[in-house]
Length: 411
Image 1 (cartoon, rainbow, N blue to C red):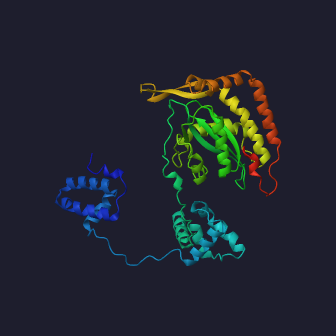
Image 2 (image 1 turned 120 degrees about the vertical axis):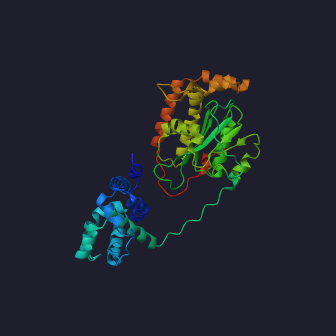
Image 3 (image 1 turned 30 degrees about the vertical axis):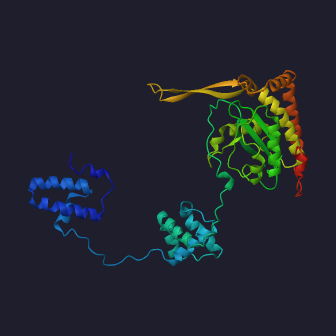
């Protein structure tokens, strides 16, 4: 293999690099005999990519670049830039890749309405201009446009500073650590005030709590958490919401101050999977029933809360939920790469709490009595009937605000 064969596969040499290389090789070429000169020409041809006759002519010359005798003039002048600017702005500032193939057609359309003067020279330039030139000219035109004032950065929420960011582990060994989220029932528009679902999921057992809220003011958020605290049959040890201001503000700090035994953590910004358990239940326990319709009245809020009261018993005591119980790392072999095998168990959250001895005897007896006296098929039919009634309720048809206090438990 000749020494230059490896270099021939790289990028093509510039003219300055060719001259520099040939200046170094000329002394060897001049001292060589006829056979050696042939080998050197072959080597230089591989390195530079040039023909042997071209190399002979270059080696016989000065190997210095001649200065340009006449400077090149601009091909596309101010009239071309003005026409391109009009075309660019008239068609919504589309990109060069969409503009370039249609320049002549767009220019003729604008010329018929007197927006530009399409002379033959300009039409020829629009026909022959390259995509790279159009992209470069558009880049300059965009630089000359007045820039929109940048919005001042939003000040950080001071109530987040002392809350640690983490991801709750899947193998928590005791109940009471809840992921928290707020589901929006706004439909296609977030305009105005609408219904939210405050949902909490216990990582250990899968126990779920939901309340319907009209808006997300501190009054309704406090009322929703107060209802959940009164209903959860086992102690809450930790809460893990996202970074929303509805969870971290001065009012909620005052509300949670007496509950010093509850540890707060939060997910990392833009890491939605840090709240993976509650995000999954948002789909299976909220959207699967209510869908994506807009709910924005007091009547709809109260109807949704009646559904959630029955779903509380149905989902927690009658619906088995899959939970990851173990992970096994399998090494790589001839048939499969290294992988993780996951094992799941399907039990109701109620059963997991009983097995963990997380309930007091009185709470366990009361819930067991309620389970024994409930027909799950009748309960499921009641939930479907309440859902049908909810979907028949009319939405808000005026700009007058709804009375949020009618939805509070303390009203």
